[in-house]
Length: 201
Image (cartoon, rainbow, N blue to C red; front, side, top):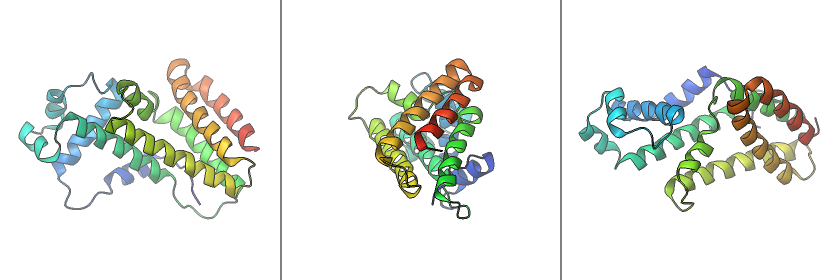
């Protein structure tokens, strides 16, 4: 069973759950780069600024990353790991209730955490080459997200779960962008009502 539960404490735990031998400087680089990339865009943030804000030397950075592209990949993998952490076992809710919790969790995410759109869509817009490593990371994440939703819908007995899961992914994409452009007070209720209708809730 999966539950999309969005909380800052959960996110902090997920991002902090790294092997004990991972370099503190590396973690600081990824954290600072992730914040800047999401807030300001990947191509608009230079390495000099990342190094300065992370208080890391260029030599130290190159011990962990071959360059900026590798740091971008680490940023997206960090987002992927955190989002996977939200699909966690929490009791044993009935399948339909589980789907409802997933939808409510996404709605919470739209309004509280990913307030500048989807980090994966934002990154894809900056990397038009579909064969790039960045786009491959994005593709893997989206396929996982879609298949996880599909499995939850299958358990809930939703007809044509594959199509409904794809529709929910697209609806989430639209809601993230809509909340950024039009405000969460407009986007969130539309997302929740439409998602419930799609899932037959």
